Image 1 (cartoon, rainbow, N blue to C red):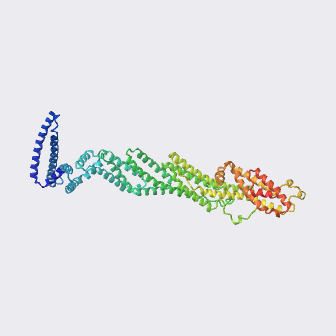
Image 2: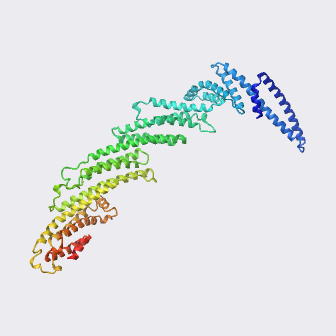
Image 3: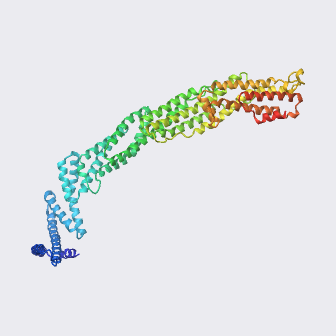
Length: 604
């Protein structure tokens, strides 16, 4: 406090008087020092006598304060004289100006410890700004030319004027200007060479990294100035860069080939980023890298959708034969499968990451395929008016095979879905072993369609047996002698089953043989197991489907029999024999008789 008060009072004293006072203080200080040294010698001789210790400490404190006051007063006087001299020096006389500014900086550092004079501070900083304004451009040129001698000189100049941070920021201005100039020079013909931008960023960064010695600091990480400056300029240009990247891939004549070419450039840049030793620089570059890569991913997704929809549009139901069977669909699905697998393989090679993002466009593609199959009635689920009339098939074996072809066809679609899904997952696991990859999630669309198809075709298979069965049953019910007159009064156990029910047994056996002939096909099993709820054993798939057929036949039979109480006795006796055969034949085929059928037998 005493020093500050003396410092403030000193402003009222004239320079000559102040100088004389300083000289007096200096002489007094010298006398005090002589006395202090004398007392110290006495203290050593009389170490046991400590009565003089306080006196020595008082002298020491007094001397320290006096020295400080002298230092402050000298700094104030020197500041005043030097600042006046500075105003008189021409701007071109930079050496003299610099020496004066260094002296002022030394005085300022002393004076600012005890009092802050805002007016003095503003005037001094302005003087330094004017002087260093000449050195800003010089620093930029020295960085450009890698002129270490000049940089050493400039660094010392900035440091002596307490502007070292400003010197270091110039490196940030340099890289900012260089990268901006690069972007301005890029023409339309180079707009697609987006990965080359990273080469330029690396070149600029490496150019400055050689001069890292000028950017060391104990209190901060000034080299981040360079990294942040590059990143800020790049981020400003990045939306336009991403736009060019997207359009380049989307508009390419062969997008998949173009993606592979881009991937080679990208992999080289990725390797260079990984080999960089500056973690902070790597972090910011990775942000730019991933952002740009995402633009290519989005473009690739659009390419995927467009190219695959084109393949789906090429799938056409033949005008002949498609109403009765669906053997044509599997052949037309092959180009779609090849295209999808090629896209996955290409993405795996082009994008060094988890490719499960392909699940999204592929879901869309299968949704479109489902819509086309539904709208064009590929599986003949919409019954036409002229198909609603019941008739006895002339070739039930061929008709059964045709109906099964629709079940196999939808199984082929589901197999394609599963193959694509598994390929995506396997490709992802190769890249990232412990990552749970995304999968397509709209298989339920196909499952619902599959269930309708299996039910419809099982009903058609049943109808092949039902139509002649109903016709034969009605003839038997209206006949006065169902078998022959000699057997009319025979007991029921002696009555032979009627021809119509024998044909039912033969029909079920024939269909079992036809179903068994395709039960080893993967597409058939996929369809039937899915229709059964997914928990069916593959070995029981054929029996499950035949059971669906038999249940429909049994219900139709019970409905056709009607009220047995109204039937003649001989008809009831024949029905009892027919039912016995039907149930036994079903069991032989590992089929389960319905409750309606067993109840009807008990009634009879």
